[in-house]
Image (cartoon, rainbow, N blue to C red; front, top):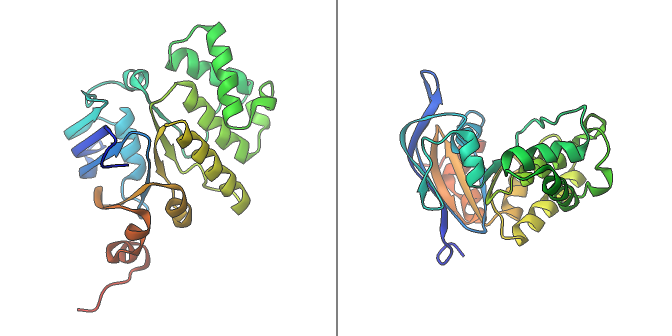
Length: 246
C-alpha cells in the first residue's frame, strides 16, 4: 500500500520543544493515505510532543511539515484542524457537564465549521461510529473510562479529519477493553481514514497497524513492518536493554 498510495503527511527534519528544552531533534517520516502508522518508544522520547507539533500546539524551530501537499509548519491549530488534522488526548478532556451529543457538536461546529442543525446530525453519526449513539443524551461526566475514550475519538471525528492522531487511547483499559478499541480503529481504517496511533502496548501496535515507527531522543530510529520493527535489535535495546555481543 505504501508504494502506491499518496503521501498525506511529510515531516522533514523537524525540531521543536518547550521554551529552551528541545524534544524533537530532526524528526522525519511520511504517512500514506489510508494507513495506520503506529508509534512506539520509551517514555520521554517525544511521542506526544510530536503530536502537539503536528497540530500546531508547539511551534517548530527547524524543519517542515506538509499536509496534503500544503506546508502547514506555521499555521495555528484551528487552521490545521480545518484542513483535516484531528487528534485525541491521552487523558480525555470532555465537557463533563454537557451531553455526549453537545460535546461532539462543539467539534463539528467550531472544528469543521458546520451549522448547529447540520452539526447535530454529524455529532450523532460520530457517536454511532464509536458505539455511543444510544448514550447521546447522557452527561459526559457519567461515563466509564472506556466510554470517555470513545467520546474523545468521537469528538475528534466531529472535526471531520483526513488524518486522525490517537494518543494512547488504550491506556488504563482492561484487556477486553483494549480489544474493543482495536476493533474500533479497524472500523475507522475501513472508512479510509489515515491514522497515527501512539501506544505503549506493543502487541496492540503489532496487530493493529500497517507500519510501525520507533522513536528515541526525538528522532525516528526505525520504521517499517510492525513485526520487523519489534524484532529489530535497536528496539530490543530501547525497551529491554538488550545489546548484541560485540
